[in-house]
Length: 261
Image (cartoon, rainbow, N blue to C red; front, side):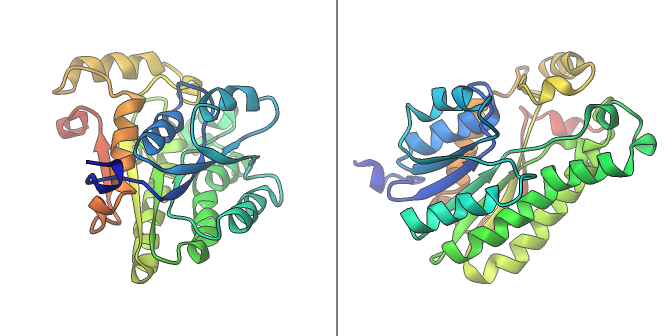
């Protein structure tokens, strides 16, 4: 049986991955899974300093386009979509896996965060997803899939997760609204909610090792989720096998979400 006939195959599909930081990032695990399932990718890197860490991933993949994309830099996100338009003329899926909050605001109480810090966190972590969806829409001529990354801190108060909790709650709401708005065009929108993973982004959260220890100890599966697990789920969600699944926040945490606050 060829890969193109397998359930969940991505053969012939083209996707954009935003958020690879290094080989340990969730987006890297997803990019590898997309490629293994047969997809061809566009990937982005934050800046020239980050590029070598991203190319260690993309050099081993079918990656047609590699471009800088700082969503706060004017025109960079739009330039990525213009390159996709010129090279491919279509797009089948997008993975949005970026989040940021200024350290001072991330490490403060939510009630103490600055207006600018809150706005920055919302812009990078949430509104950039809406911008991405708007740019992807005209390229998804035969339908497609948009994926975001979230965390259970959106619905529970997780110690030291701080301002990112409200920001992720906003992102999840955007996923639901966007799913309804783009559904008539056969564009599906979902979010993946992994348990704690030791990524560079997560290292900015104070006492993050405590979250890892708790998850490994208390999750029914008694182990931590891996980036490869997230990749397998993401590849399924962007495949035709998930064609009737949209507007959903999907936990992948070994069952930890079942245990309550």
